[in-house]
Image 1: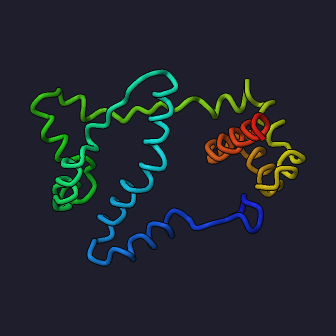
Image 2: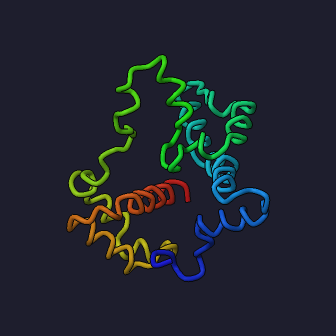
Length: 182
């Protein structure tokens, strides 16, 4: 809400999940949040991105863990089998099952993502395109964001604050898309 122009804000993700959960009074909050993730966040987010990305390169992707029967089975498991006794171990049952077939190192290493080095690009080779695309006049012309808030984010990012890399990326992509298609 500090970033969006007045009147453009909506419900936060937490508010959407809470509203969804209220419609399922028989489910505990964790199960309701997991169901929301499976039926909303994944469907409208990651699965769409995977589908578009693979189709753009004539590839076919499969999501075996989203098999209907497997998903229903997993959803019916008690929480202690899904997250461990303390509720902190993700994919516990899957890891225990696969531990018989895969080396232990597969389970103890840190998760590796596919994150590009945006922070460094924004401070170096993309610094000019970022500042031009999110200039005060451009932001004001588009009317989506509060120019002062965007300028503060740019200033803090260039000073070493990494908290704004993702929102700056989202705003940059939106602006470049607007320039090309609108």
